[in-house]
Length: 71
Image (cartoon, rainbow, N blue to C red; front, side):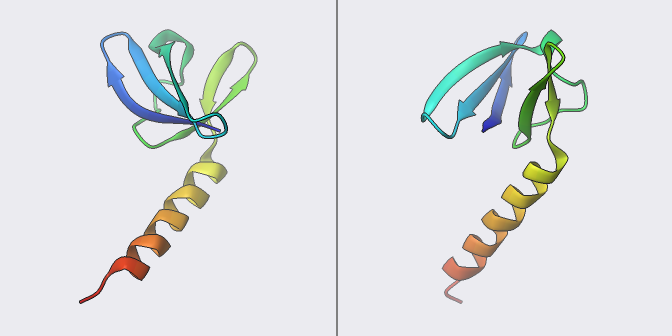
């Protein structure tokens, strides 16, 4: 799973959660609506936002944060 960590210049810095590696992808190959934290899928020679995977990941993170809330 490729997750956008940040944008730097003409590149998106992405984390591959399966290999724990980081790569730079040219922003021209990525959906213009993509933002930090989005999960990407590669289709038709371009990277598009996988809305379902992104939402699932955000929910998982929120659940983890709730578990850590000690107040």
